[in-house]
Amino acid sequence: MPTSLVELPVHPQLPGVQGHDEAHEEAHDRELTETEGRILVYLESVPRSRPELAEFLGVKSGRSGHVKKAMGRLRRLGLAELTLLDKPQSRNQKMRITEKGKAWLANSDD
Image 1 (cartoon, rainbow, N blue to C red):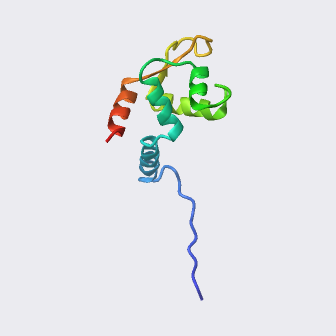
Image 2: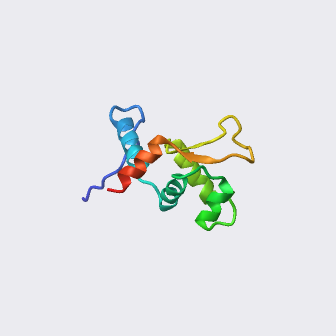
Image 3: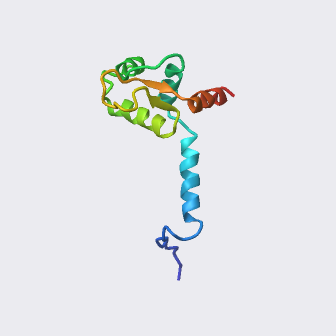
């Protein structure tokens, strides 16, 4: 009689499981999408507003989900930041590259 493998659920607190998940997420964090990379390059010289980023990317609006997702991920990774930290919804808000973002760009040229 053939035997089949059945995957059983793994408890998240099982030793080694969380380390794997964190390593998996870190591996993805090192890779940027093409859009995220283009945004970083565009931010390298001066801070840019969301409409400026959208225009650069050829998107109709800075409110595009694609642009917002890319900007959010760059911020979460510490590669870019808002210029007005205490006013995230300000119409004068811009995004700038961080030192970590500059280092990422320098290493990505290799």
